[in-house]
Length: 350
Ligand code: NAP
Ligand code: 3JN
Image (cartoon, rainbow, N blue to C red; front, side, top):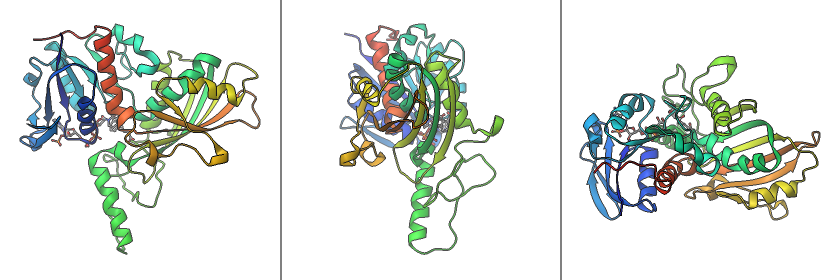
């Protein structure tokens, strides 16, 4: 029986740690897993399925005899090393934005467009976390009633910005509770930008750097990736992305306009109840609605607060929550690997 050698690139990071966890329970037959990171982490021990493994330094020849490489070490590392991995016969699943919009690179959410995997030429892109959970929630509605417009506002957890941002928020919260007057901010809202603001007890309407038309890069990712995944360049999409002081679990307030007339809230709920990867949590009478604290460590996308718009017959509002490090990144990547295996789309190197 086939079994795969898998490499995690960025194994010591916030996403890499979760990829390791997802590989501990995957249905993918594994021969071995190799943990790669920068020189700084060489020799660090990683516990996997009860055994300890040393982190190795990422190098081009790390990919000799690897079948599947899951990259999560930033776009520059993907641009430098994905081709080295592919040259050595690997299929690369890339968690960064480096190739998401490249022609010929499938951008895949398995519940939505796993058929696109058949087109892969060694590289598959994993979408942005905020896009993934929105696509899982909206695809059943898209299929049943057509979709014309999406207007989304996100409430994104700090874990989406990596380990150093998580540590910064914890320190700020502690310093504020300790009554310190100077609160240090050196990373958020965006590590490469000119100014930094505290996130603790705050909300920052900036994720990634500002770009064209006053939108940030995170907002452009949601706009462009949604159109590519749903194969609909005419889909109207707009986004406002906001960082909130939540550890894990992105929340989204999503407004949609559908194509069909006379669709009820119950019709929308029925389409979601049957949908793969979606859990409906919607009972206002019992105060039941999705929350990041209850979504964390789960691989599903939770949907609630479904309401018809008061002015538009084709407009609906939804509240969509998911664990950004799982369905938004690690789980989606491992699901892609499982699908590639099921569809016989991995070349085995040994
Ligand atoms: P993180 O916690 O800062 O971890 C970064 C990882 O990259 C660490 O393992 C780090 O290794 C490794 N790395 C950095 N420089 C390297 C180098 N020169 N060579 C080899 N490895 C290197 O960041 P994260 O939150 O896990 O995110 C990592 C990347 O994943 C992001 O940059 C982004 O592209 C992607 N991401 C995607 C999503 C999504 O929406 N799908 C969400 C979050 C992140 P050391 O520990 O040795 O430094
Ligand atoms: O901030 C978040 O909640 C998600 C962040 C994702 C991210 C962070 C740094 C670089 C990405 C991404 O996946 O789009 C990237 C990137 O690869 O561009």
